[in-house]
Length: 245
Image (cartoon, rainbow, N blue to C red; front, side):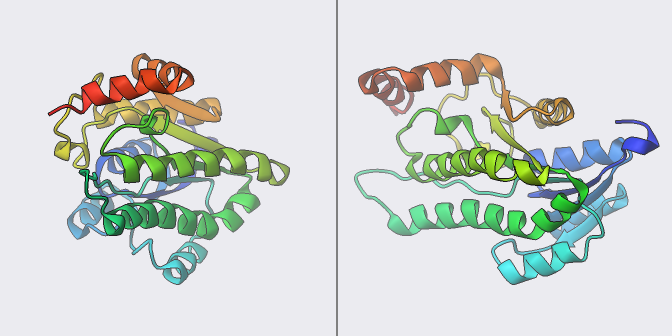
């Protein structure tokens, strides 16, 4: 992806923090055109200094998202990485917190897809959504976050089918734990945690390879997928042990 013929026009949501910010930096360093979408003015200014086109945008505002994406001339690659996490502590089920996580994680993604899709159809480009390995196995306290990521998995895999006739490729990213501001709140073990640089490399490699599913690190995602296929009592016991305080 280093010669001029392969330079891409890339939109990244959630570009002002964590994996999204690292992706923006790495794609800029490779000479691509990057539209960095986020709400952190300081991070947007930093990315602008590196050559990005900053877009200060509330992704929960559908009309503003569509208008902003309409103003972009071309989109070859849309990486939808905006999201949030809140944990639920039983026995109190906080429906407000649950719906907030579901609404933000699904709302920002669905609005970005609607805004980017016409341009992706024109360019025969690629749509990328960020899921989570937490969707493979239910974990206590992650009822809201895990549910939202499971919904994202279903959505992206369905879009792989429904957008194929329009020559739009779709990739689902399934990361394990990554060192980001979001994971700093975690008070439990995070095995095989990755840096944002490692995450960005894995995602970019997967996109370059045209992978439908980009999972990393395999030493975490493969065991979780195996656990998810086992009888319920097995993964329930594992989850209970991981979440004991």
